[in-house]
Image 1 (tube, rainbow, N blue to C red):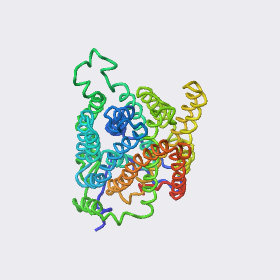
Image 2 (cartoon, rainbow, N blue to C red):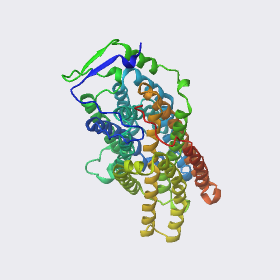
Image 3 (cartoon, helix red, strand yellow):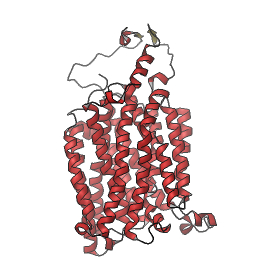
Length: 481
């Protein structure tokens, strides 16, 4: 039986003609309400992840984990960053495949609950083991990102995909603005607002407040999702009856059978070149980006005599928040236009080659500070240039999400394809922080290449991503065909 011909749709609207090959399809409007809900849901993760950046190094010092060894702070910070992604790498594919069977919304409920509980545990931890356990718990229970990207892919088509996936980096930018600002502002509240936070609890748990505030957002979004978010998995959507549409099927279970058989395909059969190349690029992008993201607060907080800038947590939070807002505005206004202008592959290649410039700015900033003797307008201008390069680099995410979504042979395995991509990215993100912070600590401790060995190694690794970017298809495949 031909399943594709088993449905007959009768509507009171004129069916649009299929455009001739080579002609441009009219852009489909985005489903604004559903996309807005997904954006709000996704905002919980970057806020939870980035809110610890301004104070994590100070927390490690205060817990005396390093026994006073300033250069070793990076080792332990890297372990805490990495273990979240270790837990995520072990489970995210399971969550993705589960969402292909039971639906997207139930998996989101588990993920949001896990984020809330783990953040509260992190704020109550007073030992290194407690910090590690809470981050592992967050990673193990978290399949949110992969499910949300799958839902964006299901809510968009080839004409509005760039607009839809441009919103994912924007959410991370907004979270990158709110999270560090919140973490830097609410850390050690007894020092800032002694009248309100004078009890022994706040002395014993000085970093609980930013964690508690970060945990509130998953609770609010969980309530919003339960009321307004619609299921996007075709076999779990509620049938909608309208007066203008009648559906006649010679096999009412035919579509479900096809969907289930595709959802249960062996993983090996999905590992074609068109799938593997975008996933490999996503993994490399994640590795380099996470290495950069953990080096940034470490570099900003490291004393000037060790090659950093010596900023305090509030200053670090302010600068990271500034990057988040600038990045978000530029992504929102220009990403889709730039994709249409130069094409997705060319934009991704440009982003990839921005990384060596980005990493080279670390020793340049350190050199400027040593030459000037203090943070002045020259350092401020250099940091703004640094942010500009970082914005160009960050555009690679929206592009690679488009390539991964378009590589899925059918929407019924889109969750699995995104799961494979996110598993690879989670492994890369687990390795990246530990490697980058360890290299940073070793470079400073043993003065390797003048303390700059970590930057040289990352620039060399970035050349591998430049080669991988060239292997992407010249155009994003039309997933509607």
